[in-house]
Length: 218
Image (cartoon, rainbow, N blue to C red; front, side):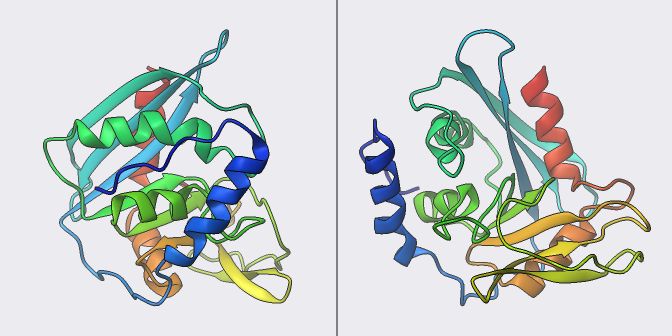
């Protein structure tokens, strides 16, 4: 795992880090079509105070059975700024990844990758720092525009930002609101969506993210 960069303390410093690391993101690698272990990552915030909880849950990709997990709580070291959430959330997530006994082959995080104002969301940042394939799956749209995908599971429409495709609105359940999938690192968009569909057998969100969400709240 790559050592983290010096941690910024101002918005300008954080944006400069994103601009500096963005060229390191690998969007050309199609990524693994099949993996053995996949990890879901999510962050919880305390109702009071400034504590951030990073949760990572590792599942068998074929069975979606939980095989490992880790949770780390830290005081947030960066303010709450849209587009810069990674600087609040990465420290506990990276620490939790270090505690795993079962190393994942693929990370799926609750957040954005390329679908970001500077094309460098949490999923991209995680990928550059860990070297692992990463997919961003968000509950709500953040940037760009997209048409409503057809109602059937597996339908999708591109998310466009300044004329560039930065992700997909993907329907994971018939007639249910789509999720927003974007590349993080070392995974092509087609492959990312295929993984997300395999990980959503019963609910809207991928099982690894659902498991990490429960752990972060606990």
